[in-house]
Image (cartoon, rainbow, N blue to C red; front, side, top):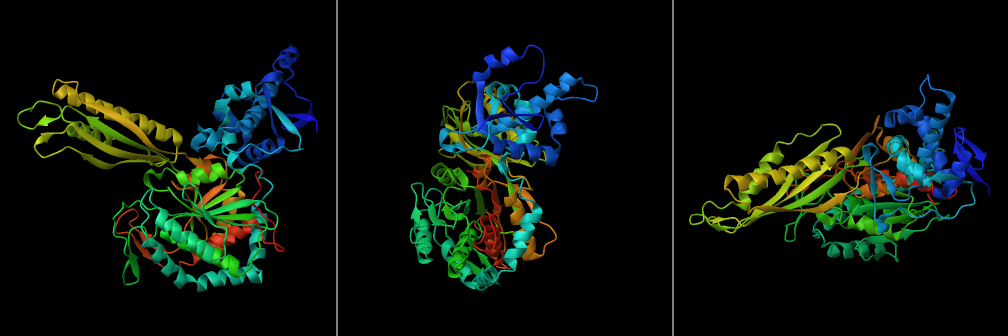
Length: 565
């Protein structure tokens, strides 16, 4: 196929540059700096940016001075137009760049990098590596659409038509009715799962139970991978696209926590009964119904019970999943309860452990020595006064504190862990910088108070969750929203940000959402967590309908989830 270059939105044979004087020879000399990337990915971004958010206006904000104004000359406008398209194109070709919030970018290790595109026979576009480096600030608008490559051809009307068609199919309606009839059994399953402890990094007992249930439901080839994820595959008739439906096994509660479920007036209380025992029960109900109703999908489906979603698990389960499976096209996590709430934005988080150290000594005889606990206390006092924006939501907390040896000793060591979160990577980094400075200032103040230099602080990053966002008009988000409104008759859905397994997929540019498992509940991450099964069946119904819209039903509908490969 011939080489092509995009300039001013048009495809022309052969690489082109703006028609400025004396540039022909220079361009020929620089050709080796350029890199080839697939044209379809670029074109989808161009269409999305140009149609959805107003390309020129977005780039004018991101890179003032490069774009034409009403008074610009012809050469200036030509150069600006060239730069805009090159900037978008360079983002499509940047292998390790993935979208995070507010136009910021994150680099990932080789293991986490998005898979290389397969060879294609389609036209290809020549992109400049040098241009990529020089136009970083201009890429803001294009980053908003990176998570939905190739989706511009799927419209809301298409998704509405597909959903309506499925809801008129007798097999699909029978499946939805079967999930409702399974509601009482699913609750018993949820209670059973809750009472199997799954503390951080020790999910194996619960994982073995989930594996046995996968196999009992007909997924004989289900396995536990090296990280501890339980995985079952259901082949479609076409083998593409590939969609993952997941819920996480682990809880935040340490080993030895009483996880016995208690019931009072229709309310069930136990640590982890909603987060995420409900998600696992909904996943099992969905799998059972799909097989018993013998519904054949066009695309492949992977059912996953992941590990390491909570606390310091640091998304280790889904990191392993995406490392080992390069052909995933979409990801849905069942986590939380509310069905009308769709998480399409991954809240980024940084977690730190701070260890304050000093000489220690007897509280009376060595009085006058600096104290590690006093330094820690100064740090907490300073951190508690930090101000963060309400929008984008940005939060922090000192989660745990420990230290000292006895009541009559000057502490030689004290430590704390800190959690910071934000829907904006920029705000998260600002908060992080200020918070770390406050800890160092606290050390200086404690040393100054006692005329010493013995207090130090060791700061360790113990958690780093990437942020990401999937556009509300992407097929995966639209399909989820349409399923919710069809099943609940809700006038609208709520789009939100949160920190879940979907973060990792979003950060890799893979469309992802997190949806609720159904029912009502509260007091998350506490021993007083509660759950009430009010219309709980709508959770797995929503997951089923969304899944069928995305993957297609053989002989009824085609998939609306674009295949990335």
